[in-house]
Amino acid sequence: MAKQPIESLNATTAATEAADLRVELNQWRQDYYDNDAPKVEDDVYDREYARLVALETAFPTIVTPDSPTQLVGGTVKAGFTKVQHPIPMLSLGDVFSQGELQEFDERLRQNVDEPFDYNCELKIDGLALSLRYENGRLIQGSTRGNGTIGEDITKNIMTIASIPHQLKRPLTVEVRGECYMPKAAFADLNARREAAGEPVFANPRNAAAGSLRQLDTKVTAERQLSTFMYNVADYAPLTARTQSDMLTEFADLGLTINPDFKVAHSMTEVFDYIDHYQHERPDLAYGIDGIVIKANPLPLQRSLGATVKVPRWAIAFKFPPDEQPTLLEDVEWTV
Ligand SMILES: NC(=O)c1cc2c(=O)c3cc(F)ccc3oc2nc1N
Image (cartoon, rainbow, N blue to C red; front, side):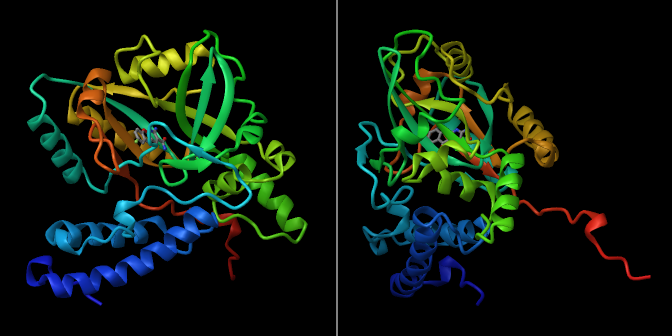
């Protein structure tokens, strides 16, 4: 049904609509985060979620603690040891148009007096993970979970080739990134599963999540997972002063980063980057669901900090869902 404009609602009608949205969104979250099997396309979830945020913003008294707007990520799957993230792993705020991205930039620059660049990065469509290194040795891997409590997947991440067990320098640092399954590995896996009469994965993100959040490490080891690291919990151990230099420092340490990042000196350059990768997307070896732009100076990231849920210094520009082009040779031509 058509949504009433927010201005025409009162707290009671808003609370009723919000309650219905929460039931629906929490069920979808459960499917997405806990069962790695979403029931709806991301854009449907995002649209309903944006409506709930708008209702709660217009009527703050209707917010409830269990509202998905107050939670981050999913929960901890049974069978996994829990890991407390000393510094929470947050999610990114989303925007869906260049206009909204422009607003994000203007809002940010109102609170920052010195000029700054953005670092543009591909938004890898996988699942977030955190790696703890002590004196350069990999000692723990965990999922985001709900942002403060994740799952211990140390044994599983030890089997991923792109994750070094020893950094090139003896740093004690917690790095964060995305675990993903390349498109080719996804196609192979589903072909094997189909041949074996097993259910196939809906998309590479679910396949990566199902392969990483796996109690049987041998299964993880054969799933050809990979990673791109993009963030730290605590900036102190690094020498880098910008996001872009941090990615280069990660590579020097032996971590795997996505090389397609780019410093943008204006929103025009940000939009050019977005347009370029919106076209490149089908040819990339891995799935992306958007672009992430981040304030490049690390001291600025630190001073801007985060809300209860998202960093103030970064935003995700989401692409519309990936329409798989129908390959013409797949179409039966009737003559
Ligand atoms: N999927 C991604 O490729 C990707 C994801 C995030 C985040 O989730 C993320 C979450 C934060 F709280 C802060 C920075 C982040 O940076 C990020 N950068 C990326 N490139």
